[in-house]
Length: 321
Image 1 (tube, rainbow, N blue to C red):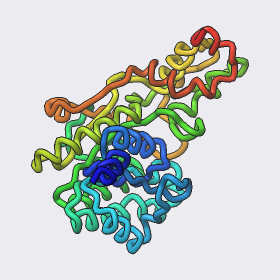
Image 2: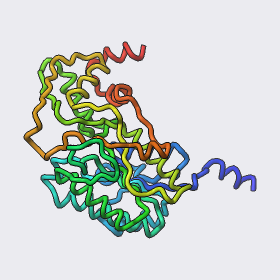
Image 3: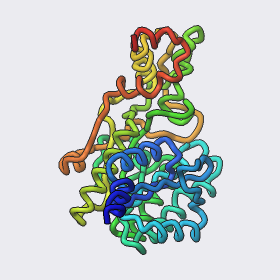
């Protein structure tokens, strides 16, 4: 008995189980960490980037999906995996639809089979951006194929599993492995190389949102759901600082005391690539009324995310010494 007690103290596995898809991605890594550090038994799965700490699961393989869900028996599944690059979706519509719609529908079915609460991550791009802010009850009208596939995914998960939460979120940033991982951090090179003038979009209104904040919302939603089965349906979460890419770039420059005079605001609507909504601001009052939410100020969040990619290392001395 003494031995058993010692063993139990050493490996006290939390009783609440959560499965994260897309756990190798920018959002998935943050969601994995948030649950893992808050007393959840957390399993993450990835595909291209699956490392030893994550399960290698192809979400298009329905048998593999069935097996991991039935083996692990999660109470909650957070579905972060998606093709999220609008221009890639336009170029590979079938592959994108397979992942964003078909795989999501299948995951919802399997979740229902084990009584798991599914959180499906969606996007502000389900709206056309002509009459913000958008409530959960507002009628979607996606302008591009990315928004269309994510909206189809929403409908598919809700049809296959009524106990699903759809969480719509806007453009994300956070602690990236590569700058290209986020549409926000990808601008850092243009900001840093101030010897070359750079055109920056100053038309589309964005609400950059830290993945750590979205992860906290997912966990709070899951924990509320464990106590209250009425928690389901569609929810919105978003940062509350409205910025164009030009304004984000200037804020990034300011956060690192870099010049921004080489950045040029472009106020015309973009001509190339997938159509983008002008302002798809999400109204988050539904989650706020539930006491759910977390918001990291943009400058603090971006500093934490980008300092490893700073070329001029003198800055580090001024901040850390």
